[in-house]
Image (tube, rainbow, N blue to C red; front, side, top):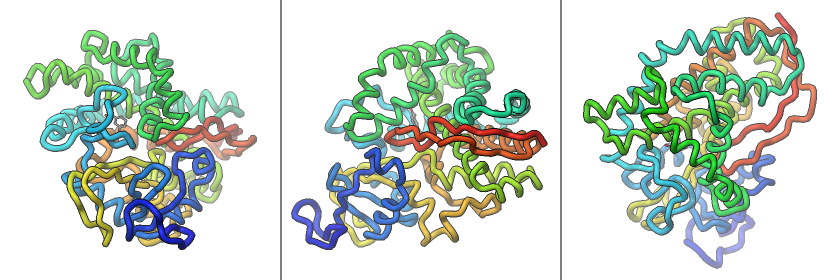
Length: 406
Ligand code: OVV
């Protein structure tokens, strides 16, 4: 049956067919009514626009994420099936890999971004957050995206990686290409890839061992070559993963948190009253806005999922953002509540591929929200927020605000 109740004429029977295009500008402008339709249509749906299965309920998104043998990543986590199409760039050795290949590369990045590594950078990250907030308090009125959500991660993450100062303007554009490329061959993806050459050239060069400062995350990855954990060919590609996934994601995570706190003054007041809530306020923003909206998996065999039969070699689109607001899983899912028990949200994924950089993201979010809570009395939105359109990332292009000192 289609969502309108008529029998489907093509495609798999027994699952509801929907005509929604989750990569359309109108969808991005307000995804929530469509997320509800997707969840309500059934546990598994079929999207005729792109010929893929979809899961939007928490239980099924969680189940797919936690069965990586059936729902694999090595055929790509975008719409493109690497078994049928040549990837636009050499595949990621961690994101686009399955066990056993994934296990070793994951262990390397997991160690490089470990709790111990966070201890080493914490004071620097916190001082930079305080400096940024002080500079913004001098301005009073600014763009919370360019001047805060982008400026703060740009002031710490490239240095933490060990990148040279020149060419850093390529970092966000490169990540934007990466996340657009997970989508279907729409205008966003095609334009992004068409213009990607200078960004790709920059990134490839910076991933080389000689271009990464000692002590940084990049040098730490290359150091694993010396004890034989990875090869000299693998190291630059693992550095590439940090350049791909480490910056634009936190830009949109911090942007989401500031946008939430600016829109919901009662939650801002609670954070001011108790700045130790900063880490959970950030986590709740990741649940509420889901900066990474979707990922795909590919089935390695015929599988039954919640009564639906999915054949081998099918793409399954996971709506992380819809799962994070599924009323079957969350009380008052559409409320931003900084004291909510956020654990279990899938904004960072779940299972063996769950965000390997999550401690970096949380550290950045925590220290920035702590600095804001301690120094700022009020955040007011003073102009129309503008949305940034990307096939995978959800966030704003601009958010005009005025802040008042505490
Ligand atoms: C999670 C993620 C997003 C984008 C790129 C990569 C990972 C990568 O490993 O390159």
